Amino acid sequence: MFTLKPQTSEEGCSTGCCTPQPRGKEACPGCGAETKGVLDKTLSHLLTDAAKASLSCLDGFHYCKTPSCEIVYFRVDETLTQDDLTVTVGLKEGASPATVCYCFDWTKEKIAEEIARTGKTTALEDIKAKMENPGCSCETLNPSGACCLGDVGKVIKEIETTF
Image 1 (spheres, rainbow, N blue to C red):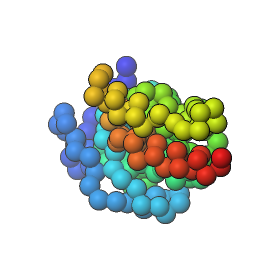
Image 2: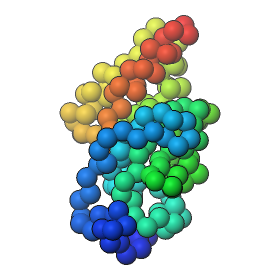
Image 3: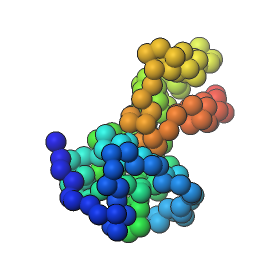
């Protein structure tokens, strides 16, 4: 277990138990792409103990999903990369396995294999059914902290164009 350093609201860190997701889009300092905020509970679940210990708090971070950008999370003058995470960010270049659904273990490789074997994939249908039962944990398992369906759909279209 890790211990975060004491906070005050002047430092920009929440002093309460439930921090809101940062609002608005921020430009990634690595690639300039627009990014969305991510909840502190996402980082709490996915960062290494060493990364968590180096931060004053987990509030106010944004997630960069640009494949070619090394930055995964950032805020003000702090950046976190793949080395700071306990999971591989499947949308980043060179990721292996390239996970696109962290709750139900769908990877680019698994989708491509299914399309090559059958001419189609059941990934979206499978994920949607499992979202109903047993349910998903996107806020803590997916590095984006959000639902994967949009990214899975894009990956399927990319793969289908190669066949």
